[in-house]
Length: 501
Image (cartoon, rainbow, N blue to C red):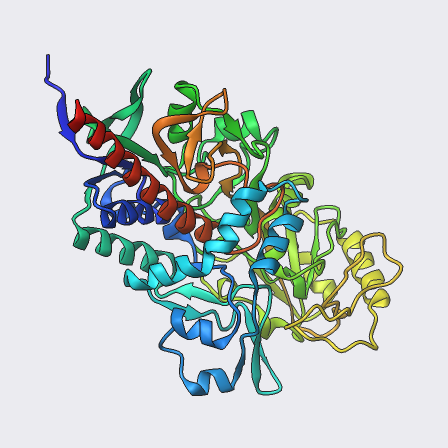
């Protein structure tokens, strides 16, 4: 019989994305020895964090705060840019209204109240941030104006964020094992004492005084998606990491942790209809500047209900509900220059035509006559006496339509026209484990499981129905840092007790 290889450390972190490595760095700087178990091979490390743009939402009061987060900004940058402000109160309000006031107020308060200090902490650990020109600000009358409460992204996007965090963790002496899939928590009546895992296919265990789970949700598991999200979710396009299949959540449930949050909800966006799963460049998020039609040739959603980063995470679900689970996004030349960079790649399902009649012939799977009727009614309903402004909710709307467009309504009448086929892409799931303010995992009696902590997408209770763009990375960093701090505090208490015996 093959002998099981054994390790020993103070704290084990399961996962190696933003939340996980923030937890590892936090624990290490608080004096604990740390081992990270990453299910993926090294080339695919980082979970969903690697697949993001690195956009991150945080509270700030103005330019002086931003100088602390982005010290590379120059006087010229500030002269041509209106960064505005985004207070803790505004962030908290966005969390509440986006989730229909179901977000856990304690967790939401921790997220919003700690966001700026956590950004400074990330900067102190050599993570670099840049303004999101182009995706979150358009140049109008010679000046950029940021909108939607989000202004910064990590240098190098998601891969840059993950790379910077891993470099810092290595510098601090954190040990990372790749191809290491956690399968079971080692536990008894006194709490959690380590993890059993498969390391390159061999059963291995690591004994520890605390475990931090940060291995993501179950978006890449079609069986769990269908079981919890419902019918058709096995048909959704899986974005992000192929390794987020729910084992971290299940391990905790197996030892009595309580489930929490919106298990039937998820972050789901519209993106290219035919791209393979787990690829970058999938999403297509400039829909506020055009219209979306389904197979029946009809509009089915208010494309301009709010800024894109307040609606995109719920509109994928609406596309999934359409006949054939697809839609087409339609634009004319008045707005084609505003389309995000993901519309310009080679792997894009796109058609162009000089006239709407020609375009109708090219829209695969769409009722042509109904499409032309929809566009005609839409064009006639556009309020033309309001100036179009992409940097604000301009109130340029439609009147008299069953499905209203509330902002950014331009007539579709200037060819050539462009259309992009999209389907639903699931990014991450909202249901997970219940934690308290110390990131301690709660059991079915609503008591903390000694030695077990959690952060990131496998924590439930923050997001319901929808999601403010950039709040996920911020939540991972905030609660990863909190988990690392409290797990370190816990093990110091355990060591003190051991020394007294």
